[in-house]
Length: 396
Ligand code: GCU
Image 1 (cartoon, rainbow, N blue to C red):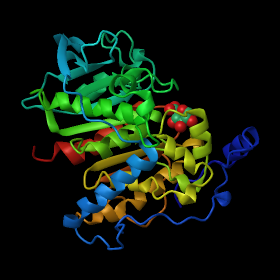
Image 2 (image 1 turned 90 degrees about the vertical axis):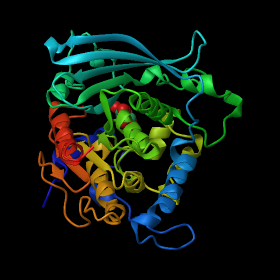
Image 3 (image 1 turned 120 degrees about the vertical axis):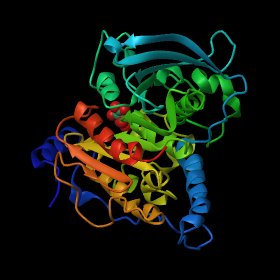
Image 4 (image 1 turned 180 degrees about the vertical axis):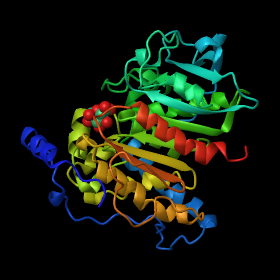
Protein backbone atom coordinates (compact mmCIF):
# COMPACT_ATOMS: atom_id res chain seq x y z
CA UNK A 1 0.00 0.00 0.00
CA UNK A 2 2.96 2.30 0.58
CA UNK A 3 3.48 5.24 2.88
CA UNK A 4 0.46 7.05 4.30
CA UNK A 5 0.53 10.20 6.41
CA UNK A 6 0.13 9.46 10.10
CA UNK A 7 -3.51 10.16 10.99
CA UNK A 8 -2.79 11.64 14.39
CA UNK A 9 -0.24 13.98 12.92
CA UNK A 10 -2.75 15.08 10.27
CA UNK A 11 -5.28 15.83 13.03
CA UNK A 12 -2.78 17.71 15.17
CA UNK A 13 -1.45 19.84 12.32
CA UNK A 14 -4.94 20.52 10.97
CA UNK A 15 -6.10 21.85 14.30
CA UNK A 16 -2.94 23.89 14.87
CA UNK A 17 -2.99 25.41 11.38
CA UNK A 18 -6.65 25.60 10.33
CA UNK A 19 -5.81 27.53 7.14
CA UNK A 20 -3.51 24.79 5.83
CA UNK A 21 -4.72 21.60 4.19
CA UNK A 22 -3.20 18.38 5.49
CA UNK A 23 -6.02 16.09 4.42
CA UNK A 24 -5.52 13.97 1.33
CA UNK A 25 -9.26 13.90 0.64
CA UNK A 26 -9.26 17.70 0.33
CA UNK A 27 -6.64 17.80 -2.38
CA UNK A 28 -8.40 19.35 -5.39
CA UNK A 29 -8.74 17.51 -8.69
CA UNK A 30 -6.06 18.70 -11.03
CA UNK A 31 -4.54 18.00 -14.41
CA UNK A 32 -0.78 18.30 -14.80
CA UNK A 33 0.66 20.04 -17.87
CA UNK A 34 1.96 17.39 -20.26
CA UNK A 35 5.71 16.88 -20.29
CA UNK A 36 5.99 15.89 -23.93
CA UNK A 37 3.62 18.39 -25.61
CA UNK A 38 5.37 21.26 -27.32
CA UNK A 39 3.69 24.66 -27.31
CA UNK A 40 2.89 24.16 -31.01
CA UNK A 41 0.89 21.04 -30.15
CA UNK A 42 3.43 18.55 -31.48
CA UNK A 43 4.39 15.64 -29.25
CA UNK A 44 8.01 14.83 -28.47
CA UNK A 45 8.64 11.18 -29.30
CA UNK A 46 12.40 10.83 -29.23
CA UNK A 47 15.45 11.95 -27.29
CA UNK A 48 16.52 13.95 -30.35
CA UNK A 49 13.40 16.12 -30.02
CA UNK A 50 13.68 16.60 -26.26
CA UNK A 51 16.06 19.64 -26.29
CA UNK A 52 13.34 21.81 -27.91
CA UNK A 53 10.77 20.88 -25.28
CA UNK A 54 13.35 21.11 -22.52
CA UNK A 55 14.16 24.67 -23.58
CA UNK A 56 10.45 25.58 -23.50
CA UNK A 57 10.08 24.17 -19.99
CA UNK A 58 13.22 25.93 -18.79
CA UNK A 59 11.91 29.23 -20.15
CA UNK A 60 8.58 28.70 -18.38
CA UNK A 61 10.34 28.26 -15.06
CA UNK A 62 12.49 31.33 -15.71
CA UNK A 63 9.53 33.42 -16.72
CA UNK A 64 7.00 32.35 -14.08
CA UNK A 65 8.82 30.85 -11.09
CA UNK A 66 12.50 31.49 -10.36
CA UNK A 67 13.31 34.36 -12.71
CA UNK A 68 16.07 34.92 -15.22
CA UNK A 69 19.68 34.92 -14.04
CA UNK A 70 22.60 36.73 -15.65
CA UNK A 71 25.79 35.14 -16.96
CA UNK A 72 28.90 35.00 -14.80
CA UNK A 73 30.55 38.44 -14.62
CA UNK A 74 33.62 38.91 -16.80
CA UNK A 75 35.72 39.82 -13.79
CA UNK A 76 35.07 36.60 -11.87
CA UNK A 77 38.20 35.09 -10.36
CA UNK A 78 39.13 32.15 -8.13
CA UNK A 79 41.42 32.70 -5.18
CA UNK A 80 43.01 29.80 -3.34
CA UNK A 81 42.88 30.75 0.31
CA UNK A 82 44.17 27.55 1.89
CA UNK A 83 45.30 24.06 0.96
CA UNK A 84 45.88 21.60 3.79
CA UNK A 85 46.81 18.12 2.55
CA UNK A 86 46.57 16.67 6.08
CA UNK A 87 42.98 17.51 6.91
CA UNK A 88 40.70 14.96 8.59
CA UNK A 89 43.72 13.14 10.04
CA UNK A 90 45.22 12.77 6.61
CA UNK A 91 42.09 11.43 4.94
CA UNK A 92 41.45 14.57 2.92
CA UNK A 93 42.95 17.70 1.47
CA UNK A 94 41.14 20.81 2.59
CA UNK A 95 40.81 23.42 -0.12
CA UNK A 96 39.30 26.81 0.54
CA UNK A 97 38.58 28.75 -2.60
CA UNK A 98 37.08 32.22 -2.69
CA UNK A 99 35.12 33.06 -5.79
CA UNK A 100 35.20 36.81 -6.42
CA UNK A 101 32.72 38.51 -8.71
CA UNK A 102 34.10 42.01 -8.63
CA UNK A 103 37.03 43.96 -7.26
CA UNK A 104 34.61 46.23 -5.37
CA UNK A 105 35.49 46.10 -1.67
CA UNK A 106 31.97 45.23 -0.45
CA UNK A 107 31.10 42.79 -3.27
CA UNK A 108 29.85 39.33 -2.27
CA UNK A 109 32.42 36.53 -2.14
CA UNK A 110 31.49 32.85 -2.35
CA UNK A 111 33.66 30.99 0.13
CA UNK A 112 33.85 27.43 -1.14
CA UNK A 113 34.97 24.73 1.30
CA UNK A 114 36.16 21.42 -0.15
CA UNK A 115 37.55 18.25 1.38
CA UNK A 116 39.10 16.16 -1.39
CA UNK A 117 39.64 12.46 -0.55
CA UNK A 118 43.37 11.67 -0.49
CA UNK A 119 42.83 8.00 -1.25
CA UNK A 120 42.17 8.07 -4.96
CA UNK A 121 43.89 7.48 -8.25
CA UNK A 122 41.81 9.81 -10.42
CA UNK A 123 39.84 13.05 -10.11
CA UNK A 124 37.05 12.53 -7.58
CA UNK A 125 33.29 12.91 -8.00
CA UNK A 126 31.83 15.64 -5.78
CA UNK A 127 28.79 16.57 -3.68
CA UNK A 128 28.12 20.30 -3.39
CA UNK A 129 25.85 21.34 -0.51
CA UNK A 130 24.11 24.69 -0.83
CA UNK A 131 24.07 25.37 2.89
CA UNK A 132 20.99 27.26 4.07
CA UNK A 133 21.69 26.81 7.76
CA UNK A 134 24.34 28.46 9.93
CA UNK A 135 27.93 28.43 8.66
CA UNK A 136 28.90 26.26 11.64
CA UNK A 137 27.31 23.38 9.69
CA UNK A 138 30.07 23.63 7.10
CA UNK A 139 32.93 24.29 9.53
CA UNK A 140 36.22 23.79 7.68
CA UNK A 141 38.14 23.41 10.94
CA UNK A 142 35.91 20.39 11.75
CA UNK A 143 35.73 21.50 15.38
CA UNK A 144 31.99 21.55 14.85
CA UNK A 145 30.50 18.55 13.09
CA UNK A 146 26.90 18.07 12.11
CA UNK A 147 24.91 15.52 10.17
CA UNK A 148 23.64 18.36 8.02
CA UNK A 149 26.97 18.11 6.20
CA UNK A 150 28.70 14.85 7.21
CA UNK A 151 31.92 15.75 5.45
CA UNK A 152 33.95 12.87 6.95
CA UNK A 153 31.44 10.32 5.70
CA UNK A 154 31.26 11.90 2.26
CA UNK A 155 35.05 11.72 1.96
CA UNK A 156 35.09 8.15 3.27
CA UNK A 157 32.70 7.22 0.49
CA UNK A 158 35.05 8.64 -2.12
CA UNK A 159 33.40 11.98 -2.86
CA UNK A 160 34.69 15.50 -2.53
CA UNK A 161 32.67 17.07 0.29
CA UNK A 162 32.02 20.63 -0.84
CA UNK A 163 29.78 23.37 0.49
CA UNK A 164 29.10 27.08 0.47
CA UNK A 165 26.87 29.26 2.60
CA UNK A 166 23.90 30.60 0.62
CA UNK A 167 24.13 33.98 2.40
CA UNK A 168 27.53 34.54 0.76
CA UNK A 169 25.65 35.04 -2.50
CA UNK A 170 22.49 36.67 -1.27
CA UNK A 171 21.18 37.34 2.24
CA UNK A 172 18.02 35.38 2.98
CA UNK A 173 15.83 38.39 3.67
CA UNK A 174 13.69 40.67 1.60
CA UNK A 175 15.82 43.77 1.08
CA UNK A 176 14.44 44.91 -2.26
CA UNK A 177 17.32 43.14 -4.04
CA UNK A 178 19.74 45.87 -3.03
CA UNK A 179 22.24 43.62 -1.24
CA UNK A 180 24.13 40.54 -2.32
CA UNK A 181 24.70 39.45 -5.88
CA UNK A 182 21.49 41.12 -7.12
CA UNK A 183 22.77 44.49 -5.97
CA UNK A 184 26.14 43.90 -7.61
CA UNK A 185 24.92 42.75 -11.00
CA UNK A 186 21.68 44.65 -11.49
CA UNK A 187 20.09 47.98 -10.66
CA UNK A 188 16.95 47.39 -8.55
CA UNK A 189 14.94 49.78 -10.76
CA UNK A 190 15.79 47.67 -13.82
CA UNK A 191 14.02 44.63 -12.38
CA UNK A 192 11.08 43.07 -14.21
CA UNK A 193 8.44 40.56 -13.02
CA UNK A 194 10.77 37.81 -14.28
CA UNK A 195 14.02 39.02 -12.75
CA UNK A 196 15.83 36.47 -10.64
CA UNK A 197 14.81 35.94 -7.06
CA UNK A 198 16.94 34.76 -4.17
CA UNK A 199 16.62 31.02 -4.88
CA UNK A 200 17.83 31.65 -8.44
CA UNK A 201 20.74 33.66 -7.04
CA UNK A 202 21.81 30.78 -4.79
CA UNK A 203 21.51 28.37 -7.75
CA UNK A 204 23.63 30.80 -9.77
CA UNK A 205 26.25 30.51 -7.01
CA UNK A 206 26.28 26.72 -7.44
CA UNK A 207 26.91 27.21 -11.17
CA UNK A 208 29.89 29.43 -10.35
CA UNK A 209 31.31 26.58 -8.23
CA UNK A 210 30.93 24.40 -11.32
CA UNK A 211 32.82 27.09 -13.27
CA UNK A 212 35.63 26.66 -10.78
CA UNK A 213 35.47 22.87 -10.77
CA UNK A 214 36.08 22.61 -14.50
CA UNK A 215 39.46 24.23 -13.75
CA UNK A 216 40.32 22.00 -10.77
CA UNK A 217 42.12 18.74 -11.64
CA UNK A 218 41.10 17.19 -8.30
CA UNK A 219 37.43 17.15 -9.31
CA UNK A 220 35.82 14.97 -11.94
CA UNK A 221 33.54 17.62 -13.40
CA UNK A 222 31.43 15.00 -15.21
CA UNK A 223 30.35 13.51 -11.88
CA UNK A 224 29.23 16.39 -9.69
CA UNK A 225 26.11 16.40 -7.55
CA UNK A 226 24.31 19.50 -6.28
CA UNK A 227 22.27 19.03 -3.13
CA UNK A 228 20.33 21.00 -0.57
CA UNK A 229 17.76 20.82 2.15
CA UNK A 230 14.42 22.60 2.15
CA UNK A 231 14.99 26.06 0.61
CA UNK A 232 18.41 24.67 -0.30
CA UNK A 233 16.67 21.70 -1.96
CA UNK A 234 14.46 23.97 -4.05
CA UNK A 235 17.67 25.71 -5.06
CA UNK A 236 19.50 22.47 -5.86
CA UNK A 237 16.75 21.40 -8.26
CA UNK A 238 16.84 24.76 -10.01
CA UNK A 239 20.65 24.66 -10.14
CA UNK A 240 20.52 21.22 -11.78
CA UNK A 241 17.90 22.45 -14.24
CA UNK A 242 19.83 25.57 -15.22
CA UNK A 243 23.27 23.99 -15.34
CA UNK A 244 23.45 20.64 -17.10
CA UNK A 245 27.07 20.21 -16.05
CA UNK A 246 25.66 18.83 -12.79
CA UNK A 247 25.30 15.09 -13.33
CA UNK A 248 22.83 14.73 -10.46
CA UNK A 249 20.60 16.91 -8.29
CA UNK A 250 19.26 16.08 -4.84
CA UNK A 251 16.30 17.68 -3.17
CA UNK A 252 15.88 16.95 0.52
CA UNK A 253 12.44 17.95 1.79
CA UNK A 254 12.20 20.88 -0.60
CA UNK A 255 8.39 21.02 -0.65
CA UNK A 256 6.54 23.99 -2.13
CA UNK A 257 8.39 25.62 -5.02
CA UNK A 258 10.76 22.63 -4.99
CA UNK A 259 9.79 19.02 -5.62
CA UNK A 260 6.15 19.16 -4.43
CA UNK A 261 3.34 19.58 -6.95
CA UNK A 262 1.85 23.06 -6.50
CA UNK A 263 -1.60 22.00 -7.75
CA UNK A 264 -2.14 19.68 -4.78
CA UNK A 265 -2.30 22.68 -2.42
CA UNK A 266 -1.26 20.36 0.41
CA UNK A 267 0.77 21.81 3.29
CA UNK A 268 2.56 24.98 2.19
CA UNK A 269 0.96 26.71 -0.80
CA UNK A 270 2.00 29.47 -3.17
CA UNK A 271 0.06 32.11 -1.23
CA UNK A 272 1.79 31.11 1.99
CA UNK A 273 5.31 30.92 0.61
CA UNK A 274 5.13 34.10 -1.46
CA UNK A 275 3.81 36.04 1.50
CA UNK A 276 6.38 34.72 3.97
CA UNK A 277 9.35 34.76 1.55
CA UNK A 278 8.57 37.45 -1.03
CA UNK A 279 12.18 37.45 -2.24
CA UNK A 280 12.57 33.75 -3.08
CA UNK A 281 10.85 33.61 -6.46
CA UNK A 282 10.34 36.08 -9.28
CA UNK A 283 7.46 38.47 -8.70
CA UNK A 284 5.41 36.93 -11.52
CA UNK A 285 5.11 33.75 -9.42
CA UNK A 286 2.99 35.74 -6.98
CA UNK A 287 0.31 36.10 -9.69
CA UNK A 288 -0.50 32.43 -9.13
CA UNK A 289 -1.25 32.72 -5.42
CA UNK A 290 -4.48 30.76 -4.97
CA UNK A 291 -4.58 30.15 -8.75
CA UNK A 292 -2.31 27.13 -9.02
CA UNK A 293 -4.39 25.66 -11.84
CA UNK A 294 -3.46 28.68 -14.00
CA UNK A 295 0.27 27.91 -13.83
CA UNK A 296 1.57 26.88 -17.25
CA UNK A 297 3.76 24.30 -15.48
CA UNK A 298 4.03 22.28 -12.30
CA UNK A 299 7.00 20.97 -10.38
CA UNK A 300 7.12 17.55 -12.12
CA UNK A 301 8.50 19.53 -15.06
CA UNK A 302 11.34 20.75 -12.87
CA UNK A 303 12.25 17.14 -12.11
CA UNK A 304 11.92 16.33 -15.83
CA UNK A 305 14.52 19.00 -16.62
CA UNK A 306 17.10 16.67 -15.05
CA UNK A 307 16.45 13.92 -17.63
CA UNK A 308 18.37 11.82 -18.50
CA UNK A 309 20.65 12.85 -15.62
CA UNK A 310 20.08 11.52 -12.11
CA UNK A 311 17.80 13.10 -9.55
CA UNK A 312 16.93 12.13 -5.97
CA UNK A 313 13.89 13.46 -4.14
CA UNK A 314 13.60 12.71 -0.43
CA UNK A 315 10.93 13.45 2.17
CA UNK A 316 10.42 13.00 5.91
CA UNK A 317 7.20 11.59 7.33
CA UNK A 318 6.71 14.31 9.94
CA UNK A 319 7.32 17.03 7.39
CA UNK A 320 3.82 17.24 5.97
CA UNK A 321 4.39 20.96 5.37
CA UNK A 322 6.60 19.87 2.42
CA UNK A 323 3.97 17.36 1.16
CA UNK A 324 5.85 14.04 0.85
CA UNK A 325 3.19 12.59 -1.44
CA UNK A 326 3.31 15.63 -3.71
CA UNK A 327 7.09 15.24 -3.90
CA UNK A 328 6.80 11.57 -4.81
CA UNK A 329 4.13 12.25 -7.43
CA UNK A 330 6.27 14.93 -9.09
CA UNK A 331 9.23 12.52 -9.25
CA UNK A 332 7.02 9.79 -10.66
CA UNK A 333 5.34 12.12 -13.17
CA UNK A 334 8.74 12.94 -14.66
CA UNK A 335 8.97 9.40 -16.04
CA UNK A 336 8.04 10.19 -19.69
CA UNK A 337 11.09 12.44 -20.02
CA UNK A 338 13.38 9.62 -18.84
CA UNK A 339 11.61 7.11 -21.08
CA UNK A 340 12.73 9.14 -24.11
CA UNK A 341 16.26 8.10 -23.20
CA UNK A 342 15.37 4.47 -22.54
CA UNK A 343 15.46 5.07 -18.79
CA UNK A 344 12.71 3.90 -16.45
CA UNK A 345 12.81 6.75 -13.93
CA UNK A 346 10.61 5.80 -10.97
CA UNK A 347 8.19 4.02 -13.29
CA UNK A 348 4.81 5.54 -14.06
CA UNK A 349 2.71 3.25 -11.90
CA UNK A 350 2.95 2.21 -8.29
CA UNK A 351 2.27 3.48 -4.84
CA UNK A 352 4.72 5.36 -2.70
CA UNK A 353 7.39 3.17 -1.14
CA UNK A 354 7.08 2.27 2.54
CA UNK A 355 8.73 4.34 5.23
CA UNK A 356 12.55 4.07 5.25
CA UNK A 357 12.50 2.08 2.01
CA UNK A 358 14.44 4.00 -0.64
CA UNK A 359 13.29 3.44 -4.17
CA UNK A 360 16.44 3.76 -6.27
CA UNK A 361 15.00 3.84 -9.76
CA UNK A 362 16.64 4.20 -13.13
CA UNK A 363 17.73 7.84 -13.11
CA UNK A 364 15.18 8.91 -10.47
CA UNK A 365 15.17 7.97 -6.78
CA UNK A 366 12.83 8.71 -3.90
CA UNK A 367 12.51 7.96 -0.21
CA UNK A 368 10.42 9.01 2.75
CA UNK A 369 12.20 8.48 6.05
CA UNK A 370 10.83 8.67 9.54
CA UNK A 371 11.53 11.82 11.45
CA UNK A 372 11.42 15.53 11.23
CA UNK A 373 12.47 18.25 8.82
CA UNK A 374 16.25 18.05 8.57
CA UNK A 375 19.10 16.69 6.45
CA UNK A 376 20.12 13.51 8.25
CA UNK A 377 22.94 11.01 7.86
CA UNK A 378 20.38 8.51 6.62
CA UNK A 379 19.40 10.90 3.83
CA UNK A 380 23.03 11.50 2.87
CA UNK A 381 23.80 7.80 2.75
CA UNK A 382 20.82 7.12 0.50
CA UNK A 383 21.82 9.99 -1.77
CA UNK A 384 25.35 8.64 -2.02
CA UNK A 385 24.03 5.11 -2.70
CA UNK A 386 22.21 6.50 -5.73
CA UNK A 387 25.25 8.52 -6.81
CA UNK A 388 27.40 5.37 -6.49
CA UNK A 389 25.10 3.64 -8.94
CA UNK A 390 24.55 6.53 -11.28
CA UNK A 391 27.94 8.20 -11.33
CA UNK A 392 30.73 6.11 -9.99
CA UNK A 393 30.16 3.14 -12.21
CA UNK A 394 29.83 5.37 -15.22
CA UNK A 395 33.07 5.54 -17.23
CA UNK A 396 34.36 9.08 -16.86
C1 GCU B 1 9.97 27.39 5.70
C2 GCU B 1 9.37 27.52 4.32
C3 GCU B 1 9.70 26.32 3.45
C4 GCU B 1 11.18 26.02 3.47
C5 GCU B 1 11.67 25.92 4.89
C6 GCU B 1 13.18 25.76 5.03
O1 GCU B 1 9.34 26.39 6.39
O2 GCU B 1 8.00 27.67 4.46
O3 GCU B 1 9.28 26.52 2.12
O4 GCU B 1 11.47 24.89 2.71
O5 GCU B 1 11.34 27.10 5.59
O6 GCU B 1 13.93 26.17 4.17
O7 GCU B 1 13.60 25.21 6.04
